[in-house]
Image (cartoon, rainbow, N blue to C red; front, top):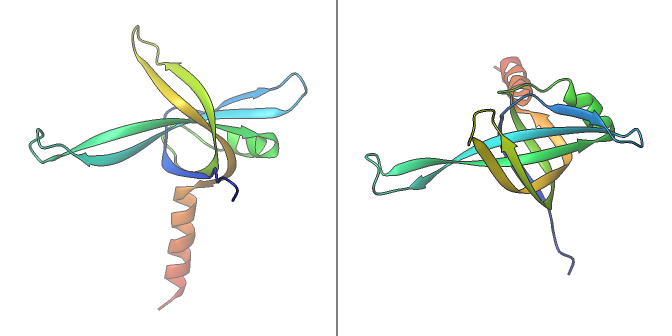
Length: 128
């Protein structure tokens, strides 16, 4: 049996995409996604706590060209890709402020969630 390496992640962009071109002329776009989830914590007044996972996502070629100029900080997106072993440290600008990720998604698919929700609304508006 072959191993499976597929990851799906939704969240919001932490900052605007970083676009670049490799020395061989291949477009590359790096984005950083914050994905929130809730865990129980009996030490909190409401018994739950929000935790945020940060994921670096890399788009290559035509996907980098298309999405690198469309996505913006705060956009809610859904991405599908392969998890690649890669350590990454993002320095946020203030001394000592940084985020460390332990992996990176090599992207196969990206969807802007707002666009998906708008499409669903259009379908629902057409039905009685």
